[in-house]
Length: 468
Image 1: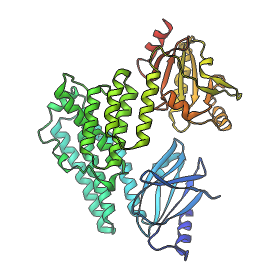
Image 2: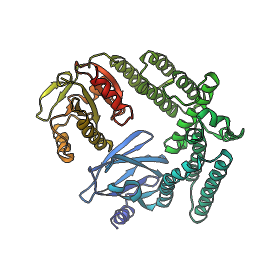
Image 3: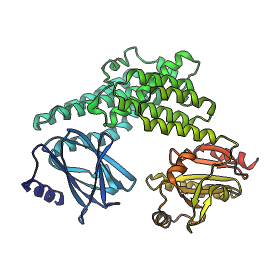
Image 4: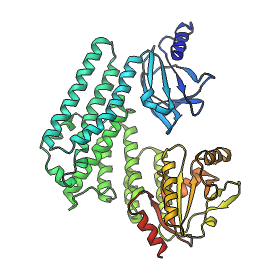
């Protein structure tokens, strides 16, 4: 009802600009009092909620297409997309406790967006079904996948009969349906449990990937739409592995293989036309290899290949600095100089708080995984009392905000810290992803600069640390 009132007020406003679009909403259980609006990675504005937790924003100089709105919800900073066209007046209502599931649009342009959000939600449920189908033989898997795609296209036809729609809407829906279908076929060899990836490739029908002739590597309308990017990521992984198998004796995917990643970088550079997506795919490939491989001797070759192909200065600088940081964090090195703050606002050097075998783990309230990390650390403390577990909030240096979180989640004050300069510390310690873990020996030397508390090998690493 409240959203409807906003819309009525908007439509009665004599100052409504012809050709502009209006976008607003009501946020139930807001975690913060603002919404961030953006278009193609460019932030348009930060819009504050009023006392009723509502807002209304005019998009002037209207460029039709997908827009993104972000706001803080139960699981951290969440986002969703909205299709805006000239003269739209779209209002949403959502509950931050059930972000996507509670999202509903009203107003002029609402029907197309409700269709898109339902397509997204149906896709999440469909993924589990397709995963089950992926254990079938290739021909039967294909038959069932074709049935799902045909059902979606029939549903779109029925919607178009009752609702006048635009080309951009139909292109988005058709693109989403097709690229979801293509994605399922690309990941099939990786999620079918029958054999190794090499054996799965060899068992595929000769026409299994005929759809690749229909791929648009410059699909600007879908540039910001997650099904398209997700497809491209897995598409290049698949093709790179297939090429890698031709040149090696490997039978399974090794994401830390230098040659596999070099092939992937070359394929992305050769085939992608859209520079924005190309740079993102190149950066992701280089980042994933560098963050997962512990062989620092191979970093430079991958970095050089990436640098020669990348045209995004900021991405290039970030990857280059990450390589430098990881080289400095090799096993046997001491930690760099990093200033931290404890719960009593005392400034300390990170190295000075390490006086016995230590696990450093990082967290941020932006990601819900921080509770899992803390629970895991508490379990390990009981099993390994000789090891110190130190938690560092990696994304804020605001004392009061951080202290409120410590109290809210009932974390121990003794082994919780924040960085004095989070951005500098994250760069020096190569903290990405945010939930990475470091193991340090009693002398303050690095044993493993990039591990995972949830790995089945983690406790073996701790035993090795204690037996030094």
